[in-house]
Structures are given as structure tokens and as C-alpha cells.
Image (cartoon, rainbow, N blue to C red; front, side, top):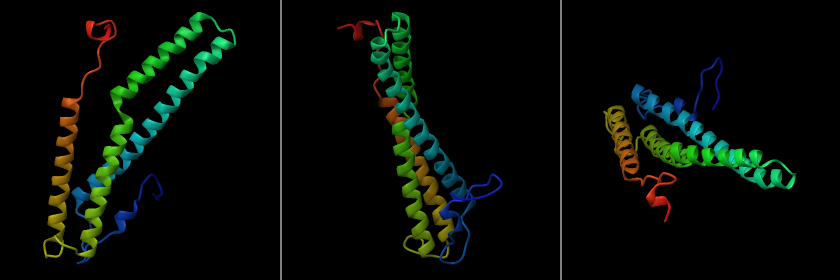
Length: 163
């Protein structure tokens, strides 16, 4: 990614169709969205893992150093909150999904720029725009289905978690 004055540029922004056509606006918008969200999800994943690791490791270290029960209890509570946030936001899972989708879209862009089937006709840009929306719609449906079918974690103290 390069760019100046707050404007990002990705390698695919320079691609042209085999007929010299520029990227359709919807494709540029979708690609930019996935690029930025991939980075955001990756950052969230690594930060959440690092925070959870540091907080978890600090509990025995503080106990060994003679910290009060209050301090170790607060650290333990922060570990639980961090783990809950990680589960709630699913940064790692979303990073993988976003990156996979971005790779699929990049493949379509390369095929379009080379004029490979199905982008070998006069309407190649329209086919790319349509195919991009199909992929995005499909991925959004898969994401929604995953969220609907994900088992909910039992609430602490509920009968399901006390057995």
C-alpha cells in the first residue's frame, strides 16, 4: 500500500481490463473495503491475543511478587473480560474470512485484466462488476449463517455451566 495525502493505493488500483477499461466503481469500493477491514481485523486479532497473554502471565508473576489478592483478582477479571471481547468480536475468524474474500476478488481482477474467461467478451467490466457483487453477497450470507449457527456460550452461574 502506498499513497500520499491520506489516500491509499493498492497494487490492484493500477489494473486495467484487457480492453483498457478502468475498474468499475463498485469493484474499487468493495476491494478497498476488504483491504481496510482485513488490516483492522488482523490488528484486532494480534492485539487481543497479546493483551490476553500479558494479563494471563501477570497473574502468577504478581502473586509471586507478593501482590494482594485484590490485584490478582482484578487481573483475573481482566483476563475474563479480554477473553469475552475476543469471543464477541472474533477478530481472528473475521481476519481469515476477510482475507479469503479479498484473495478471491483479487483473482477475479487478475483474470479480468488478462481477458481470461469469463472476462474475454466486450462486456468484461460488467461481468466483473456483477461477479464481484455475487461473491460479496455469497460471503455475506455465509457470514450471517455462521453467526446464526454459532453456539452461544453459557452464562456464568447458569445451570448449563455448573454441571
